[in-house]
Amino acid sequence: MKVALASDHGGVNIRKEIANLMDELGIEYQDFGCDCEGSVDYPDYALPVAEKVASGEFDRGILICGTGIGMSIAANKVKGIRCALVHDTFSAKATRAHNDTNILTMGERVIGPGLARDIAQIWLTEEFEAGRHATRIGKISEYEQK
Ligand code: RB5
Image 1 (cartoon, rainbow, N blue to C red):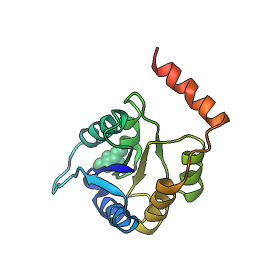
Image 2: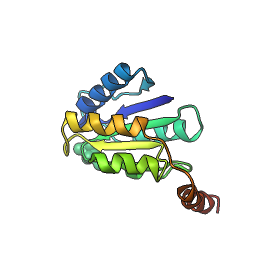
Image 3: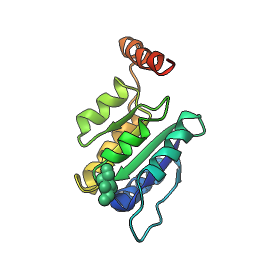
Image 4: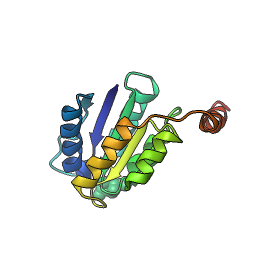
């Protein structure tokens, strides 16, 4: 699995925590910044990462901003992206098992680094259950083709 990782200025610390986690888990990833001192615009990071995942260049994406909300709104605009904003471990598992999400967002101003790490680890390792859940995702994909 190859993961595209990015944050805006509001998510730099958790992004570094997630990079360390992926190093420990032996997961291949590329860090797309930001290398920012000042403030940047989250769509400038969310949209390129989402496009890399949608095109198949990367299998998954993880995006961090202050709330996780802006990143998730932007990422979900890209066709083929199923992005979830997650701040608890139950949803981290469920959104992989049921929604086969390919991008995870979290908010550094909402949760701490320990919980973010647990969420990311679950999300990176949980399998999609398919079956009835695949039927439901298929309906979203069909809608996207209209
Ligand atoms: C930046 O101040 C903040 O708006 C951004 O990180 C994010 O929370 C947007 O949704």
